[in-house]
Structures are given as C-alpha cells and as structure tokens.
Image 1: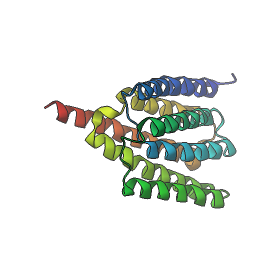
Image 2: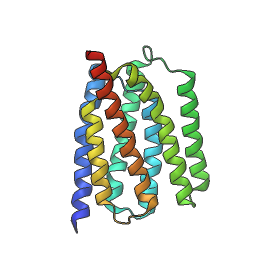
Image 3: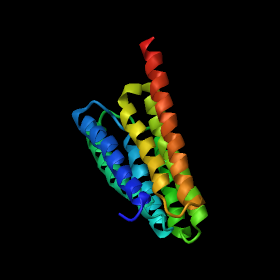
Length: 196
C-alpha cells in the first residue's frame, strides 16, 4: 500500500461488505424485501460508474464501486427470485427502469464525453431509486437502516480514496450519498410514524 488512499480504498470495501452481506442474508431469510428494479438499475449504473472511475484514474476510489456492483447484482437476483410473486412492480417502476436503461445506453454512446456520461448515469441512478423510495415509504421495515448507513460511510471513504478529484469522480459519489441519506430519513421517519 503506497499511501492513505489505498487504506481508504480497502476500508471502503470492508464497509461495503459489512453493509451488503447482512442485507443479502436478511433478504434470503425473508426479513428484508429490496426492490429488484432499484437493484437492477444499481447494478447497471454502478458497473458503468466503476468503469468511468477506472478510466478517469480514480485509483482506489474505484475499488468499492466495483465491489458494490457485484453485491448489487447478487441482491438484484436474490430479490427478483425471492419476491417475484409477492412484490408488485408497477408501470411507474417499469418506466423508471426504462429511463435508467436508456441513460446507460446513452452513456455507452457518449462515454468519450465523461461529464455528460456521469450526469446520465447519476440521472439513471436517481430514476432507479424511486421504486425503493416508494416501497420504503409504504413499508419502512422492508429496508435495512444499517445497510444504508454503511453505504454512506463507504461512499465518504470512497471520496477520500479517490486519487484524481474532479467532477467526474466526485459527483456520482456525492449524489449517491444524498440518495442514501434520503433513504435513511424515509426509514427513520416512517418507522417512527408507524410506531405512533
């Protein structure tokens, strides 16, 4: 390990593992019900963002997105097969999935234009979060407060691990952190409302 960024890069993977492994295990056990549309979009956009980070010389800042992409894929597959009969996927969910996939396709076409590519991928990630926001608003115990919190910590360390600090490398992580904070707010607010 050459410098502190390598240490932060390793820590982001450790935090990601600490966040994703319990979520995947609780999903398999039926305690959590992640929305497969969101996790499919996260797999697509996460993989594309990881590639952009690699090409943009983010260094260890790209390690966690690569690891997270694999975890999102696993979670997406588990969620789909575990809940395909009980989870209602709405037309709006399909619309957001279509918009997210369209943004990824536009990224593939325009990937030489890194800033436009990142904006499209972030937009697709936001579209992909909508089904989970909606589901969590209705069922706040269907998501892991711990998992989302670990994701925020990992994103912050991921920013600290990034070698080349610019818009392309920082914007996706910043927006992802905001989306995770929104998820935490929804979970806490709705759980408290449910308890009253």
